Image (cartoon, rainbow, N blue to C red; front, side, top):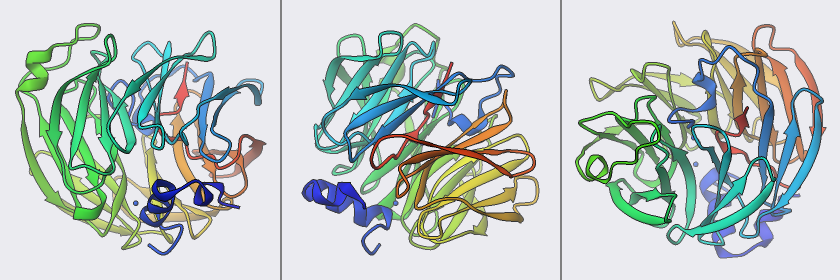
Length: 345
């Protein structure tokens, strides 16, 4: 069922990393779970690693309106600040596919190391790409595709989260059991990439649970949350203090986290569940029977809906962020991951 497992050495390594064979996300800077926009988001861009496509879902009509071919086993996804461009990491292609959201087609490919996985976009439009086989995060200027700087990370960096002002960047370093927190002295100015800003930064390390994969920042970037596939928990990090402050026991092999204004939603791969916790108390409030191997997850504050990519069922699941009741499953491509910000206007 897990098509990626037949796609080669990288895929096998990634399966192990994510807990699928025995063993690991941001918008204009922050994961979709913390987006403050009151307007409903219109589209979901679901990366399908098995079929090597991106399914474009119209959330109003609840239907797939396009399938975009993206060779290279697409996994990570992020949106430009204006949502006009979709960036997709292709680990086996060793690059990032640039998709024109209006035309719904790939318009260029940007080389991005040996194993690009987690991907995020800062408010100034610069790309941050985690290389699974390296110990750094690349900062890439999408206008010319050139790497302008690198950020120090631990082994096998996976998920990335960026604050709204672009001053804080966090990577989940799966094989180092840590997050790397990078701070820039000045904010990112929308539409004005600044190489000098990228070149000046400091990085610190915070220990978290075992094999962190997805990472999410809250609205004001004071708290980070990591999904730890090896210890079956979520670590809550005080970003300013640079230390873990809580551990939340969740389901088996947690993959990614989305935040509403009141709750956190964790996809539990092996549990086929979604664990819901109260972000004020860090107490688990509900465990939802979801789907086969839930992975990428995002919150639409306008609709008050949570969307989940279900790897094993090849569907996109939606559920109420308030009642936690499922609202339907929509077939997408084979092996959907949607690792990152996949909900857009």
